[in-house]
Length: 219
Ligand code: DC
Image (tube, rainbow, N blue to C red; front, side, top):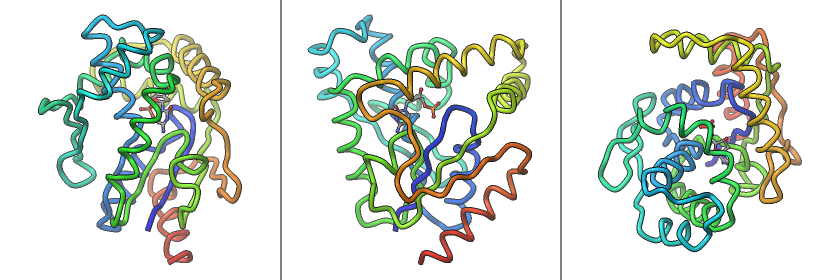
């Protein structure tokens, strides 16, 4: 069974999907972390996002996997735990450019389908309901206002001891939303049959209950 969740940055997907997976005893598949891992590797190797040949080579030689049960799932790239490194500012600022390339998307979509095969999976990203698992039993499109999402990001940064202005975060999120939803390849959009869930003002528990209820109804 596949529970597929799409939505823009900061809509609450990750924390909700992790908790839903933990509650259902399901595999948690964070596809954004996979795009981030590829971006990290390309940046480390000094590969420009426009260099499709070099990116195709990176996709052939890179192993990306997950370790541990949700909510403590770690992302492992070539044997290294990169869970913290993929959240750096540099990766966050560049990931929208790298993830739009055909070679990167094709390889990761194949891998996501392989990871999910035969399991109950909670999978979150931007193209999960539209492209990766269009036949998922549960499809959710999570949204929240830009201001609310920026406030959540500000809290996350504060927890890491980093002070960020709301204005900067609103600009960053707006820029990423624009790139993710206007790219030619698998843009972020609400899929046919997806249930829209506006999380503005909802608590994390409300969000978890909403998706668990949907899953129970669709079993
Ligand atoms: O969810 P996130 O912020 O960790 O995602 C990082 C980037 O990866 C985001 O800017 C868009 C991209 N992404 C994507 O294109 N397709 C997915 N299925 C998941 C993420």
